Image (cartoon, rainbow, N blue to C red):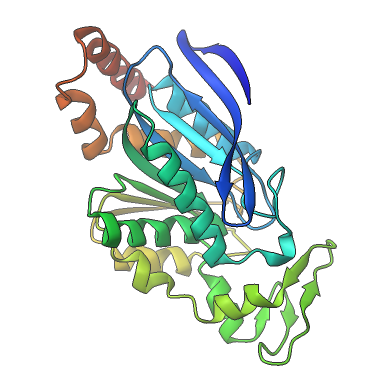
Length: 297
């Protein structure tokens, strides 16, 4: 475990590199906390297929949250980045289990008041389904807010149509794995589990605030999948960014700012920051200060 102290916009903060037990071994994680606060919301950030916790957009979101007095944890799913496990063994269900282990870990941290989820691409599918599962298992307030960035629910349609990543296959007769042009091996179980994945059925059990962001020029995940998510949720904001691609490379800082402002301005999070009677007067002043900063940006 490595600890790095840093200062962003005059906010004292702490960054910890650690590992957390996941479904297929240890998960490499980075936890950023505004350590001058005794209590703070926590956001779990989830990367997409074959990406990692070092995806620049997630780092920008983590930094933006930190400035506003909100902690975050971003991690590598099993078989990705610095985490243990084989990529070939990765499936969406075991990524959901990885994310649930992260949730359980941060939930028991004494300073954490609320937990929100942010997921990009396949990580968006994981975040949506985790929010639904936790709402069913632990109650409607288990997850306080949810952000989906170009959620890749087309992985199920690809499996049903026997084609993902431009490769055709038969889930009943396919080989042990399929090797993509990049050299990455995707295992048979990935496709079989995607075939039966209850994405929307599970996701809709979450009823809290949702923000969905998608680029109009996304060639990997058409915007209709975000629109389908938006039609399913009641408390939702859908924002289609004109000219943006799947990775939001056109202006990642702007996208990170949208995400940060949504979480900071979430009615539930604001209510917790203002009404938590355990907060000291000084902490309340800092919380109000962070909110004012977010409004003038």
